[in-house]
Amino acid sequence: MHNKEMLGNKHIVFLGESGFPVGLATIQRLTLMARAFISQGSKSTVICRKGVHVNRSKVNFPIQGNYEGIDYSYTSKSIYKPKGFLKRNVQKIKGMLGEYAALKTLKSTTGIDVIIISEMKVVHILRYWVFSRILKIPMVMNFVEMTSSMQHRSSPLRKLNDYILDNYVIKMFEGALPISDKLVDYYHQLSPRKPNLKTPIICDFDKFDVQKTEMEPYFLYCGSFKYKEVRDFVIAAYKLIASDESMKLYMIVSGGSKAETEALEAEVNRSLKTTPIKLFSNIPYSELIQLYVNAKALLIPLRPTVQDAARFPHKIGEYLASGNPVVTTNIGEIKNYFEHEKTALIAESYDLEAFATQMKFIVDNPQKSEVIGENGQNMGRSEFDYRMLGENLSKFVDDLS
Figure 1: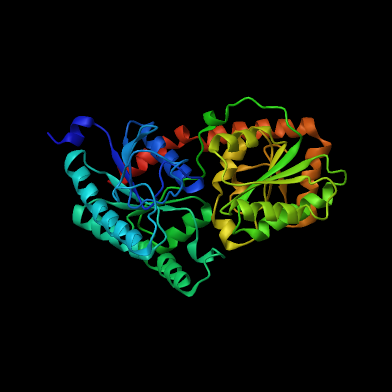
Figure 2: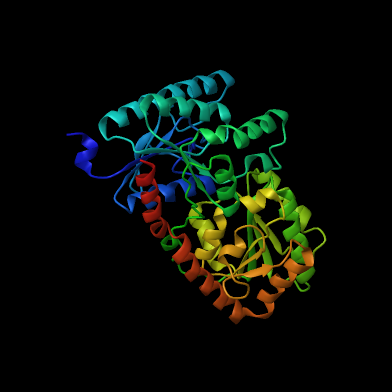
């Protein structure tokens, strides 16, 4: 009897994302999708083709193991990014060859029901397509961005890659897991006969069940250095309502160095009296959770762009899990899940005064704000907890097979 038949469950393999199990939004989504399958009795495996970690004192784990029930392996034979052009490329080649070998071994032992791909580079997707054809395993796209609409991907080569991906390569998948209605509709237009399952933000709400600690009151914004426009928007909105600066603004900015973060903090506080804006970067996940839980409100203005209408930021799920109110704008998926002044505070447009008005509501109405936060958390548990999504994901794989 085939080993998979003896196991009596499905086996889902994730490819394309390196760094597991350490990382923020993309790694967290992958981890929670894998755990969603596990909650339904399936087996999940993550294969990383290259090492991406650089800090050996902070990141240190085996190249093969199990994390939260998920098997993983690094086919590059190292979790670290090598120094030097030649060493990096040798590792990449070793990792790519190892990916196929790992898939072939898993196929012949436990079996593989589907490969879920998280990848934006066309060359790698084409390689995975070849693997899937040879091994006769269906390939599904983890569809979380309209790649060609991402403003920071502006180089000519990236633009060409993204055009080919969004218009042609996407058709090579046997199915897709779009994160938003806009991506569901887009995939259906390109591949009307292929299945897709809307898979929104995913969160483990239990991880945020931590005790609040006494801190000064603050708003919290989490973003990336590459989203300068949104970061500046949040700062400008804060300045409109922070007349006495008693409510602070904490900002977690990923992707910048310590020196860049310190320089930015000095710059944004220059016109203020008490240095109310504090910046954090590269903090441990446990510290991040504590900052979420202690905040008076969590900020995420979405812009009226194709990019923001198509995506559904992972941190919204984490914001909700904190039990504190979310302040956002009425763009994209927000209207599908949230109700203004009941489960979130929603500015009708991406406008400084409109957004600042919702921030001011938090300052003026602390008790009502707490209720909104609790309602948002309850809604999030019913819509976005990984265990609630496991059954639909499992059925999608059954139908695909």
